[in-house]
Length: 372
Image (cartoon, rainbow, N blue to C red; front, side, top):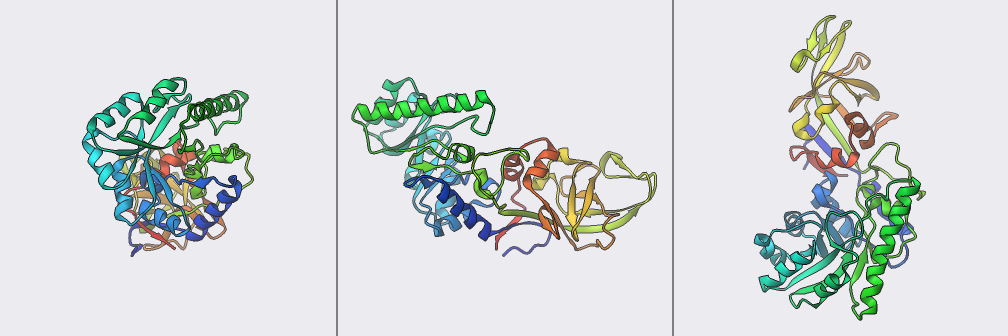
């Protein structure tokens, strides 16, 4: 049980369920959700999130590594778990023992799996233009050969859209080109008599901006958790995404900082006049970016308290002058609602100069997580 003692994460199960419902309504009939629960479910807690999703009939998940897949199996997650990233041959036993589906990252990797001598369940990655993982889409002979390898049971092929979050003419054109490349591979495989495999292409933005596409799975990621990567991102789908995660910390102390005094490491903040400041029990070891030093605010008693000074490893300072009732032991909100105000993960990302995906996926293991 989460004790809410120092700093913690609260997950709103109702919001997660509503996001699932909205995605299922948006996707074409026959297209199932394959949620991305990598990076500890974007910081939310992989076992908690995947368990809630499984209760709602989700049977396909994707993760970044074999270790993440093993964690889900040990938490009782059934169905298919696809490892999206590279797995070293020394870990091939883990794939078999825990019934994980491995991505074939290129033709050489397929040959290495075949040489191992054991039988693996795989999805073939297709490089349609991101040039990260996957065999090139136009190397159809190599892709076809992977289906012929007796030690590989190919149950899927997929690719990844790299600019589907963009709205410019060239970004849309490039995305449409990637879609054509992927469809060409699938059509050619079918023409050559190869069938019985599932197809998937869209991540969050691929779903929200190209929902008309009809594949077997859709890999909803950041948007499933009710947020977008950037505060100003625009999408075509008319969905009301509901944030799942709230991040909170205790106020450790409240004290006066007198005019001219500095606070924190390097005395990076100096009071131009008497201020009432507080120390929160959370810092960069918990995932609060150090680049948020002297930037942004938290919420307490429904009011804003600006961040002051440098973010420390375990603590951070805020200005409580405008929150006169703030005291030690109170709850401060870094992501979530307090009264009529709300801070979203996109806001923290903007203050830190990054995207919400990074903010959430770096939330540390010291943060207790609970689903309400």
